[in-house]
Amino acid sequence: MNNVYVYCELEGTTVADVSLELLTKGRKLANQLGCQLEAILAGSNLEGVEKQVMPYGVDKVHIFDAPGLFPYTSLPHASILINLFKEEKPQVCLMGATVIGRDLGPRVSSALTSGLTADCTALEIGPHEDKRAGKTYENLLYQIRPAFGGNIVATIINPEHRPQMATVREGVMKKEVLDENYQGEIIRHDVSKYVNDTDYIVKVIDRHVEKAKHNLKGAPIVITGGYGMGSKENFDMLYELAKELHGEVGASRAAVDAGFCEHDRQIGQTGVTVRPKLYIACGISGQIQHIAGMQDAGIIISINNDPNAPINTIADYVINGTVEEVIPKMIKYYKKNSK
Amino acid sequence: MSLKIIVLAKQVPDTRNVGKDAMTAEGTVNRSALPAIFNPEDLNALEQALRLKDAHPGSTVTLLTMGPGRAAEIIREGLYRGADNGYLLTDRAFAGADTLATSYALATAIRKIGDYDIILGGRQAIDGDTAQVGPQVAEKLGLPQVTYAEEILNVDETGRKITVKRHIDGGVETVEAPLPLVITVNGSAAPCRPRNAKLVMKYKYALGKQERPAELPHAGLYEQRPYLNIQEWSVTDVNGDLSQCGLAGSPTKVKAIQNIVFQAKESKTLTGSDADIENLMVELLANHTIG
Image (cartoon, rainbow over all chains, first blue to last red; front, side, top):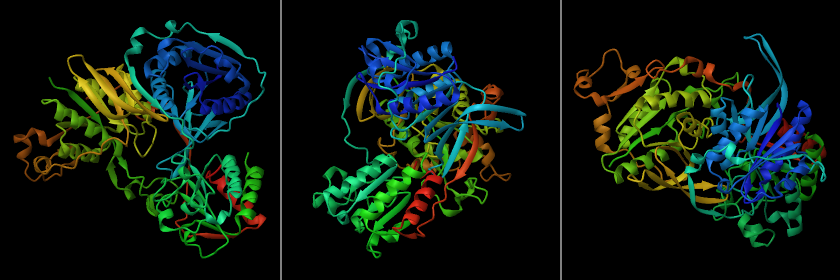
C-alpha cells in the first residue's frame, strides 16, 4: 500500500534502459517518501528476469508471465495494472515515455481516474497549499515537464487522486545500480486473475525491431564536433560531455570525411537533421549545409577559436576558445553545479 | 457495406512558430498572438478516414471537436476536405479540462453520436504533446486502441476486423484488431489532401451558432440547406456529469509555470575562462536546458 511502482518495459526478456532509469529515480523517491519501491514485469518466459531489476533497490517484484503478454498489446497490460493498483493502491506510478508507456499510461489513468503527466523531465517531492480550498498537502509528486511547444516549463500535481502517474523519456534520468546483491520479494501472479481472455483481441501479426545505435534525431541535447576537433581522440571529450548531459554526439561532414567520427552521426543536409533543445557546436565553422541540419535547435552554443566562424552568427552563446580548453571545463562545472 | 467513422480533431495555437509576443509580461501564454490551426496530426487522421471513405463507398466521416465557438473553423476545414458533417462540443463547463476531463467530454459526445465503427484522431496535439486523449477515450468507451498508426492497411467489413501498420520503439509492427476501435495516427502518416474547390463552395457559409452575426447575410440559406448549420452541443446536450467536466473533472493541477525565454539570436560572447564557463553551466542548469 502507498508505495512507488515502476512499470518495467520488456523487449523479449530484456528490461528496457528507461525502466532501469526509472527504478533508480523511483528508489530515491521511495526513500524520500519513506515507502517501498515495487516493480511490475509483464511478458512471456520471464524465468529469472527479476535479476535485472533487483540491483536497483526493488523491494517487491510483481511478475506476470503468460504467452499472450509479449509482444505488448494495450488491453492485457492495462488490465494487469488497473487490477493490481486497485489492490495495492500505490501513491506513485512511473513508466517510460515510450510508445508502450504512452499507450498504456493514459488507459490505466482513465480507468482509475488518476492524473497522468506525460514526458516529465524532472520529478520532485514537495508540499502544496490550495489556498482556495484551505487545504495543504505534504509529499506530493511534482511532475515537471516542458509544455506549449517547449516554450514553458510546467509543474503538475495530482493533489487528490492516486496513483500520481508520470511518464519520463529515455535518457532523462540516470541509471545507477544501488546494490548488486539487493534482495527484494518476488511475487509470481496468476495472470488469469488479472486479465480476461477477451483482452487478447488485438493480435500482432508482424513485427520488426532494429536496435538503434544512437538516438541523434530524438536527443534533446546534441554535441557536435567539426574539423576543428583536430583528431578522433579529441572526439572522446565530446562523448564524455554527452554522457554527463544525457546527450548524443554528432559530427560535421568535414569531421566525418577526416575520419574523426562514423558516417551515421553526420549532421546536415546530407546527414541527419536534428532539432534538439541544446546544440553545442565544437570546432565547427558552420557551412550552410551543416546549418540546414541544425538551425531549428533551441539554444546553440558555438565553441571556436575563430571569432569569425559563420556559425557564430546563429549561435546564442559564442565561446572564444579552443575545444581542448573549454570542454573539460564544461564537464567540470556541470558536475560541480548539478544536483 | 459502409463504415461510420468519427474523427477527433482539435484547434490548437501554432506553437511551432512562436514569436516574441507569444508570452505576456506575466509569463502566461498570449493565445491571441498565435494563429489557431488544425492540429497537424489530426489532419493525418482525417486523411486516413477519407481514404477509408474512398475505398468503402457510402461511408461517412464525422468530425468531433471541443473548444470555444471559433473552433467551428476546424469543422469547416474538415468539410472542405471531404468530411460529411461535424459536431462542436462547446460549453463553459468544459473549460480548464485536463486530458482526462477532455476524454470524458468527447466520450459522452461519441455516445450521443451513437453509431460508429472507427474513431480516429491524431496521436497528440502540439499544444500539449501528451498523446493521452486517444487511449483515454478508448478506455471510457470500453474499446480497444491502436496508437502510433502509420497506415490502415485493410478493413474487413464482414469479419469486422481492421489491419493497421503502427510505429513501435525502434521499428514497426502490423496489428489486427476488431471493430469498433480507436486509432491514433502518427505525423509521419500520409499528409491530408488539400481542400476541394467544390466543397469549399458548398460549405463556405457553414457556421456554428456562436459565429453567426446578428445580421446574417443569406439568412434563408440556413433553412434551405441544413448542412450549413454546424451543430453545437453543450454539456446538457450530451448528458455530461458536471463533476467530471472541465476543471472540476481534472485530477491534474498546474502548480507553477516557468517561462522559457529564448534570446533570439542576440548572442552572448564568452571567453574560455573558468568563470565564464561556470556561469554558463549554472545558467543552463537554472533554466532547465540541461540537468
